[in-house]
Length: 328
Image (cartoon, rainbow, N blue to C red; front, side, top):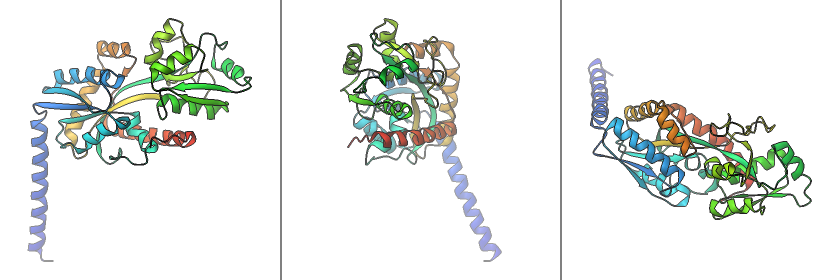
């Protein structure tokens, strides 16, 4: 190869890199567009929707543009996630993903129309809450050890309810059953509106369910919380020990949400949104609003978010395998 030809190739490569850099800078400068669509793959009024709307309002005030929440529901969140994947990678479409859509569904469904690893640019975790281990008030157990002693004396074993197969309460129950060697049967209901009354009536023996849903029942004595599944005690229930403090080691189950964008979105935009979320999370008033809805506003860098989702996949892949759960 002659020196002249080599110089031509180097010049072409430099020109292409300059064009790509200029395009990235232009995309960043032009962002946000008139409308930023935040796709929630679950129904309006649910926890993911409420928490996403709270954050979207704050991001609109901080970053500009018109932030619109769009609920695209169905197939356990898969339809909404596919819509995010297919959107233009210009930063004006954000997916409000969850533990299920990013770290569990690929093990429950034989086929997904999106790849949670390859199809998204990760932005930040945005919220986190945990589950509470709850029993009916008539149960004699006051802590996890007492519950296990009581449960193992039951001739036919015990049962636990959840809002359906493949939900985190179902999988958390399976994890507990395997970790403790408990003879427990899963009773799936159509939703929390059915599973919660069943527990209060003693038709099921325990649940490991969303702390936000059960807080009113715990506070009024309609169920009793024996432990929480977060790494530390939950701020609004400081008197309830963690599972680790209760003697069940390596049992951390958190429900969480994260913002993602279509693959190919300029990293500068993802970083800008991530930094804004971190600033918002430092506001005590915002954190108090989140706690009122049963969650904590979390902020992580794009790389931290991607690594966390992968770490969760390792755990839940094994739990789904042990449970035998399938959604199709």
